[in-house]
Image (cartoon, rainbow, N blue to C red; front, side, top):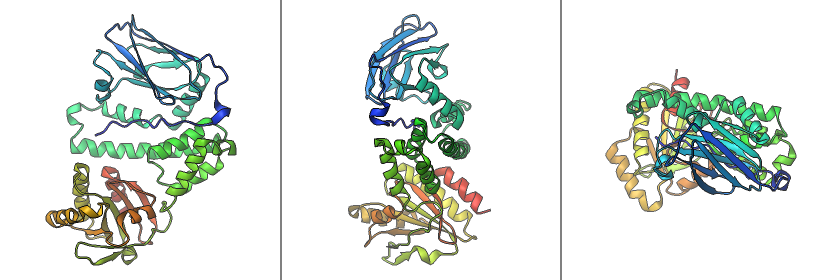
Length: 379
């Protein structure tokens, strides 16, 4: 399971947000009484800066200048093994904060992840926002995993429980972010909330996301980041939850046409995939389970291959050899990529659920999150 990384994109408010104080920032920190070879790494996501400092009796310091406020990370290399090595760890000891040109203090008793950042009003505002929405996805991910022994992390019961937990957490967090924007239309962190929603791929309900964007102060919407988010919302509103699913005609391995509208009256999972990927193999297994579980209900699966023309034969061979028990199509004429554009440029593996009336009920789901939602619909 890949380590989830917090989206740290803020190049936000142009000249209006450039901090007046050009003296720069100073970060003074203390982590217990650690000494070299223990080291702290500093990463500024705004300036793409990477720096490091050896610990001396637990203390470290960094200095610099940022033209715009943005996110930064401190990560602890307790044994001096190097940043590449600690980034591979499942439980990286890392602290994320909002960086501006302030005198910043970091205090931690034994680890950065439980450290406290003071001295920056911007960071105080960020921490208030973060608390309001229930914390970061990264923190939720790490906290949940740390409750379970590592040897169980890849077991089916744990991954199923974990995926369902994370889906519920992200859903609650999404609603809280929307509420924050509604209550704070002029806040820098309302724009960050939308950036985070888009970057985390949790913009499934684009009607709500679009309404939140339009409710923000026009000065924020007209910044470089605000305009970028506006363009993304416009693109991803195509095929949004609650809208009619765009119809298409694609072709199966026997070159017979398959039209989405022909399945009106049933729940239809549109499953976008490609061949030759271990993640896809796991998703195919889950789809097979769902196909058997709901075979007596009004439920259909249409797999849409996003393989390029040169891999068409590979796709046909895999479909036939694996005997995947649902409708398999490849865009022989209109093209699979043209089809995915109808739904807002999707990745793989990802699924959309279309309800019996032909409207999009769920979007951008895979793994146990999809299965959890299907179970709710198929009760």
